[in-house]
Image (cartoon, helix red, strand yellow):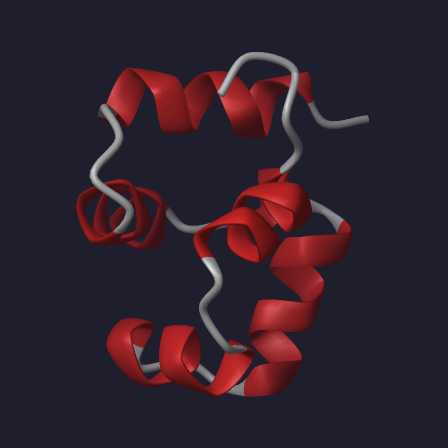
Length: 68
């Protein structure tokens, strides 16, 4: 997971944007904002994504903080 972006993580996991939006209870517009700038992500969504993708919350935070 090291060096991967949030967008790459979503692609690597092979999930659709619709599936992820449904699980997070967010709109596609919000997901698009997260993909463009993951630092905008709410903590509750970061935790949920980490759980959905079976990665540590620290690992998910590392991915988000490495984004430019």
